[in-house]
Image (cartoon, rainbow, N blue to C red):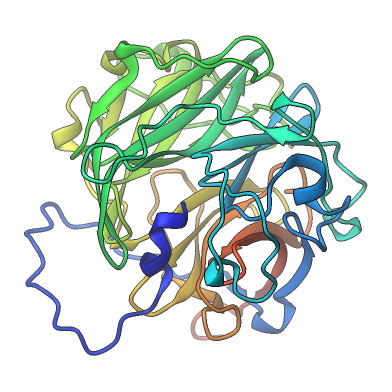
Length: 400
């Protein structure tokens, strides 16, 4: 996502255009029982670069710099998808101070989970096209105004099948904004070595789901997440998981989406896990129920919302949502007790003052049943991905 350079900057003093009509109002925010503890936010370890856990990624995989780094579980390992990726030469401090070659729009690695992310998240291997060289998974034309790049925005596994949501970026226009050709779901049935982009799973460039976050209650990424929300006419979704852990994966996947860029609202869709490659199978939350039309999708959270992630945390008994607020340079978190909200007010986890030009906070699966909250975050200046840590603290009820 190197071409988002300016998008990671905080722009001050530029008049903003009058925002378009937002449509239906978002639900009112709920008062959170938990509050972010700013003192607990800290940097754990690099995943990319010369100081990466596991060793220098340029020497090991030809990856001198990259961004994003959202993870999903595949056969007990963590798959990690990155955006625009470059090779050498090394350029500590300011990655783009010198030209870099070997541009790949996207790459994929794997992590063998340690006992705790505090021990470091080391890339065990990557999908390669030759020894020591991470391969581009989804081809892009790399022509500005035609197709600048193809960026994976989130991944999920369903059985042995791997699915990556992607966006085809036509052009990066101005800070925090870009236009899309389309967005869709790519699929691999051979462990991530080859990918196809079925025409049945493509959305137009103005979709509200240009970038997404996937959640499957009871699935490998959110095994303890409750799934109690019924869909009229869909009896399978009436299944309830009252225990601490779902006995089996839900047949449904929640899809949280934003348009291309960092200034849209959050919308929500739902689809059966076995029909994620069928656009007609998606249902869209309209504020009170599910519609077959994306145009009916109501905002869960009003923008500006940048790259986002959502996970269930069984310790806090809350859904957690993290994203970048581009104009203020804040990485924020919201919480909710149900996937549809209402979502709490945004609380600041960290800022671009503490971590210059940071973006893309992705909650890490696998460690979601304790007080520690683990996420990855990208930093454009150094063009690296870092593992981060945060915590919440109990907040007394109002009036106490």
